[in-house]
Image (cartoon, rainbow, N blue to C red; front, top):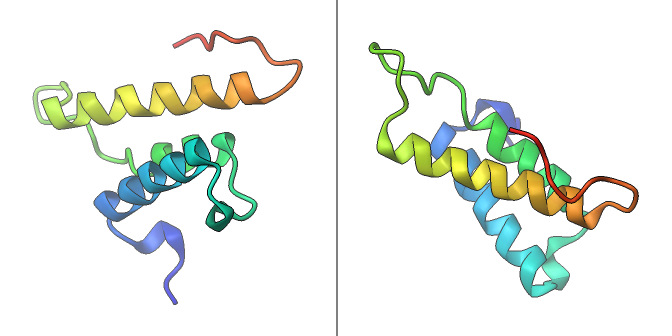
Length: 87
């Protein structure tokens, strides 16, 4: 078994998306996963996203939007947290 931090960025991002879907469906296979952990998993896949021009590629922009969605879902699912997460 490899630590999560050692798998590819694509694999980490795919795991975050899959986990998000399991939480939305209320899957029993989600285990102790929560939206905050999904957001953290997505953020862990964001290393080295800025290209040589200092910009995000279109794929990276879509991933960033997913990370924002994950953060908002985490805030909504956590009592006492604001519903809007500042970017």
